[in-house]
Structure formats: C-alpha cells, structure tokens
Image (cartoon, rainbow, N blue to C red; front, side, top):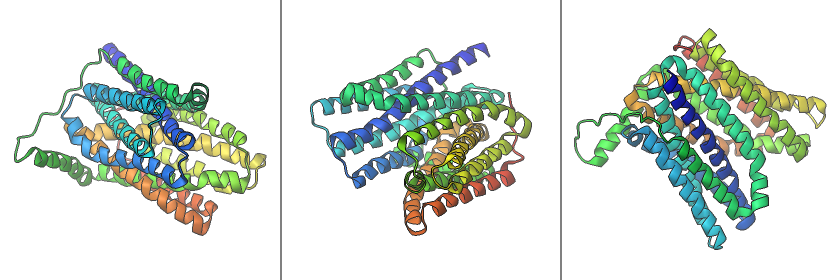
Length: 409
C-alpha cells in the first residue's frame, strides 16, 4: 500500500500542476483575444464554444483510444502537447503573427487535450487504487484541484500584467512540463486487451466507442449518472449566464466586493472535500452524492433571494459560495468514485468520455438557453431555474442511487 500511495501522490502532484496550467490557459487565451486582438463579444463566444465543444467531442471519440493505451503514456503525451500549444502561442504573440483563428484553434486543442488527460488520470486511478481507497484519493484530488485553481486565479492576472503575454504563456507551458516531470517513474496502468479485429480500423474504433455508450445506457445506475450529469451541467451553465449580470447590475456589488465574495468559494470546496469521505462512509457513495447535489441547490437558492448590495445580500452570496462549492465538491468526489467503481476497467475511459460529452453538450445548451431565458424572464428567474434543475438532480440521485454503496476507506 505504501508504494501505491507514493504513486498516487505523483498523480496528485501532476494533476494539481496540470490543473494550474489549464486554469491559466483559460485566463490567458481570453486575455490575448481581448487585449492583443481586440476581439468582439461574438468572437469571445467562439473561444468558449471551441473549448467546450472540443472537450465534448474529444470525450466521446477518444475514450476507446485511451482504453487501448497505457494511461501514464496518455497523460505524458497530453502534457507535452499542451506545453507545445502554449509555447507556440507565445512564439506567435512575440512575432506578432497571432490571429483569432489560431487562438480559437488553440482553445479547442487545449480543451481536447485537457479532457484526454483527465480521462486517462481517472482510468489510472481506477486501475491502480483499491476501491476502498478511491473516495479518499478523489477527495485529496479535489483539494489539490481547488488549491491550484485558487492560485491560478490569484496569480494569473498579475503574471499576465507583470510579465506580458509572451512570458506568461511560457510560464503556462512550463507548468505542463512540470506536470509531466511529476509522472516520472509512475507505474503504467495497462491498456485494455484489443478486441478481435473485424472489418476496418475505423469500424473497430466505432464499435469500441459504441460499446462504452451501450454499457452506459444499459446499466440503470450509469444511465442515472448520465441524467444527473446533464441536469447539473444545464443548471450550472444556466445560472452562469445570469450570475455576473445579476450581482453586478441588479444588486450593485463592485468588482472588488465580488472578488472577496468569490474567494470564499475556495473555503467551501475545501470543506466539502474534507467531509466527503466521512459522508460516504456513513451514507454510502450514492446517498453522499445526492446530499452534495442538495447542498448545491440550497446554496444556489441564496443568490436570487438577495436584494441590493447591503450586508444581508453579501451574506447570502457568501453562503451560496461556501455551501454551494462544498456541495459541488462532495458531489464530484462521489460521482467520480462511482464512475470508477461501477464500470469494467476495459471500458473506463469510454464510459467516462461519454458522460463528460453529455455534460459538455448540456453546458453549451444551458449557456444558450440561459441567455434567452434571462433576456425574456430576467436574471432572477433564470437563477431560480438553476435551483430547480439542481434540486431535480438531487432528487433523482436520492431516489436512484441511495442504495449504491462502495467500500469506503
């Protein structure tokens, strides 16, 4: 167990550093578009669509390939490629040859490679870590991710402002290489045995991809996870289109006040990660996931209750950050563990990719629908729509997954 723990700590370090780079990329690319290329709002929207759509398509199409590869090899491969993409952007910015088309392509490549890294990392954990230790490992992963995101958001603007676009992108590229270095000496998680070859390579690949989707649809627990994934993604994107407008224009909080409020979300995420293992041990993974979604709905309900920019409204928004992010952490930890333990190892990446693709597609639909809903009904009602969807996800998880128990550390 000691050796396996050391191996997981390598993956934990790589994930934390890699996530730091991913968050920097998602800040640096829009800043490049805004400050260097004077992008319009429509063009900025294409950057988001490229990132999310590439992740959705990649999750669906790369799963079969990842299952047939060594997972450590895929993580190293994607880290090196992401470093190359960011270094290439830095070189183009330095030569003043950067265009919006290239930037959109880079956003798509970054989204695709990040999803591939996460799918390979999740499959590695499922293959190399005992079921009884997965919840604790996923909780530690959530803590590392939360800390790296907080650090990236805190430092990203200063890095870009102090170093300039070129050097900031170089720092971003180096973070991916540091992630790759963390994986040195990591034992490989073996590839799934290839199926008997029938027909062309493309036909075999399509059959492999379909096998993951078929399992996801035929297993009632996985099918419910897919429904919950879609509802949660719809809820988050629906609320995301209205949240900043509501807090800034309707409530009247300044950007400085908003920054302090948003920072409390990190506290909630750490709290949720620390409680997740105990909740899973006491309630079981399925019920703990439902509790996490319920906390997400409860936290989300605090936002549309706020009126004005006074202390009561500020307290409601802080409560939303702490309670909602804690619930999100609990939900994600147990949802990830359920994915890893309910699916045969030979199909892990395919099912994981299918679930991720559904979530990414729902994110795009929710962003479009949320914009329309907020325009017609107002941002406050759109935020209530987020509460309803998240509450429905919690109810479905409670009814359908409450009996799902997995060994808890």
